[in-house]
Amino acid sequence: QVRVQGKPQFVSIVGSISPCTGSPTMDVRAFLTKNFLILGLLSVITFGLIFPEPGLALGAVRIASLTLPNLAIYTIFVVSGLCLNSFSEALQYKALTLGIVLVLGVTPLLAIPILHLGELDSSLNYSLLQGMALFCIVPTTLSSGVTMITQAKGNVSLAILLTSVTNVMGVLTMSWSASRVFSTSVEIDPMAMLFELVCLTLIPLCVGMTLRRLVTPLREFAIRRKTPLGLSQNSCILLVVWLMISKAQKEIAVASPADLSLCLSLAAGVHLIYRLVGYVAATTARLKPQEWVTIVLMSSQKSLPVCVSVLAALPAALQPRTGLFILPCIMAHAAQLIIDSVLAVRWEVQAEIKASLL
Image (cartoon, rainbow, N blue to C red; front, side, top):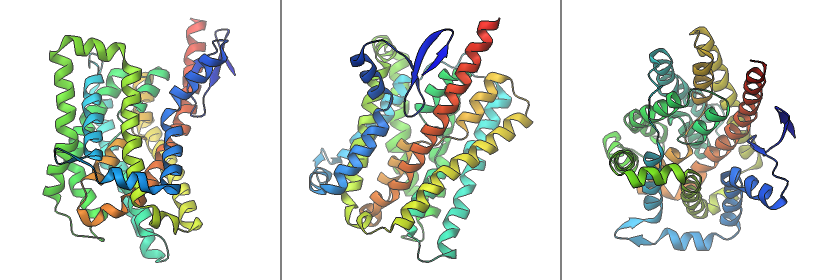
């Protein structure tokens, strides 16, 4: 427990802060809500590895020629657009430009040495390295980062705008960079991947944003029901991950402990490097405290839903290995949640202390 202005708080396994209600039922519910994605990922990975048959059966289902993963990804990005707030305080041009450069220009470069590891040691599972490289090239996170910015008392509007801009621009950059990441396995047409990513991510995101702007009842619903909508997004991510893990169960089962340990180490190491780069860049740019917190957090985070959408857009020849590709992404996502949530709690407590002294 920690105390903020005399009120007892508890910290979840990913560092989120919540008031102790005194009711065990309410505390458990709050814990499950805050850690829904992490607990869900652990559950679906375990289930998919032990019982792959249900996932394989659902993976073959088509609804109006669309697969269940495609429908889930459409839902994720429509809901993301529906939940995006206004940008009234977002036009901090120096911070916004720095964030875009870090997210789309600097942090993806780490994919190069990661892929080079496969050349240094041919015994490494190259599919796992490709999955880790994929995590490096995607834009910043869609929801958890903004939530942490809110908790850490950063500039929420700037975080939302940075998320929107990098995810829209990222559709263009990822079509080229992803084709390079996976080109050693099969030839990929960047323009074909661009078309797939536009259909899977950009169009649904714009549909959600348009609905929020034009349909007042939907906008009010998104404001009132932000938590359930977030859980629905996470449920869609869990569905896609489960189907991917089930499809690649045989390949995952024979992966060596050394390869999996390397992935776990890379997951934590990559995020710490991103955090250091963001810290140095934001400090050198002399950003205001709120913008500093926002850039340091957002530039070090990557989007798991976008990883899922890229994998869904890969050619059919690579689809059986998407379960291997997604594993490092899940590890890296968990690492950034745990590390950044702890720091967000620390910054929140510091902000509360400063406020209490004013």
